[in-house]
Amino acid sequence: MSSLPSLKGLPRLVIVPGLGDSGPEHWQSLWEQKFGAARVRQDDPENPAPQSWAARLQEVVEATPGDLVLVAHSCGVPTVAHWAQLYPVSERVKGALLVAPPDTENATLQREHPAACQMAPVPLLPLPFPAFVVASENDPFCTPERAEQFADAWGAAFVTAGEAGHINIASGHGDWPEGEVLLSEALHAWTPQGFTRL
Image (cartoon, rainbow, N blue to C red; front, side, top):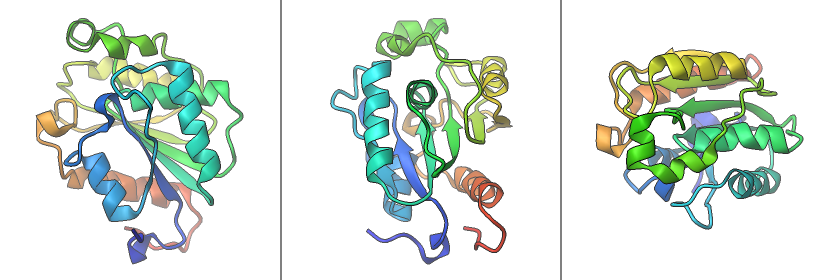
C-alpha cells in the first residue's frame, strides 16, 4: 500500500500496538492502511514481555528504511521505553507519538489486564528522541497525573486528549481524527522546514 502523497518525504510511521495487536477497526490499524505504515507484530500479542517485545520493535526498525516516527498505543508505549533502554537508537528515529500509556501500578489495570503489568517496571529515563505523550482525563488504566509523570521522565511533551477513555475501540476511537491532527503537528515539529503537512 502506498503512502498518501502528502506524506512524501516525511518519516515513515511504525505502528507499535499494545495488547491484542489492535484490531482492524482500531485507529492504529486504520493509520497503517491510510499512511502505508510499518507495523510491529508480536509473536504473542496477549502476553507482553519487555525484552521480547522490544526485540521485535528493534527488528522492525532495522528492516524499515528511511526516517521513522514510532506510533505506540497502550502496552506499545512501555515497549518503546524498554526498547530505548535496551538498544542503541538509530538517528533515523525522529520521534514518537505515545498514546494512552498504561500504569502498571494501576489497580484497574492489574485487575482487568494483569498481563499488561508484565511490562513493569516502566523505564523512567529520558528518551533519545522527541516524543508526545497523549493521555485521556478518564483513562481507566492510567490517571492523567501519572501519564504526565511519564512524559516528564521521558522528556516528552504532554498532551491531553480530554475525556477519551483508553483511546481505543472500546472508547469509540476507531477513526481518531484528533489524533491525526496531533500526528501532523508532530511530523511538522520533527522534520525540516519545507515538507508538506498532512
